[in-house]
Length: 101
Image 1 (spheres, rainbow, N blue to C red):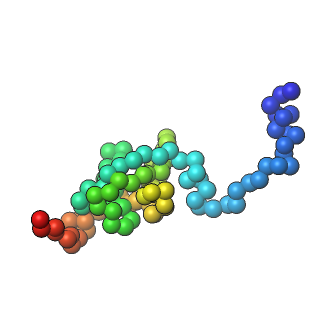
Image 2 (image 1 turned 90 degrees about the horizontal axis):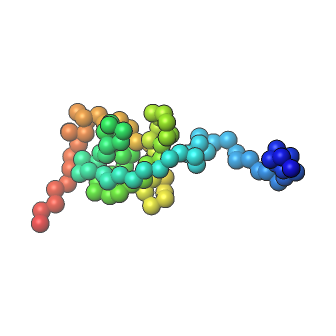
Image 3 (image 1 turned 30 degrees about the vertical axis):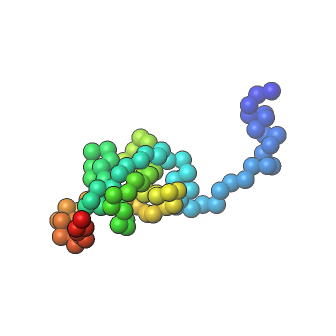
C-alpha cells in the first residue's frame, strides 16, 4: 500500500487546528536564553527586550528556524509575548531597582 492510500483511509479521522496567529508557533524551533540585568537577551546577533520584566531569569524563545521573523518569549511553558528589538535609548533611561546587600 502506498503512503497516500493509507492517508486516504484515515482522512475522516483527521482534525484540523482552528486558524490562529499562534498556530504557527507550534512548529517553531525553541532556544533557551538568560535575560540580562537590563531586561535584554541576544539572539542571532541582535539584542532584544523581553515583553515584561524577566531580569535574571531563563526564558525559552520560539522562532522560525530559517527566517528572521517574530521571536516569541516563553517562561515555564507559558507564553509571555513577542520580543522586540532593543531600543537602546529607551532601555538606558528605564528605572532599575538596585539591590543593596
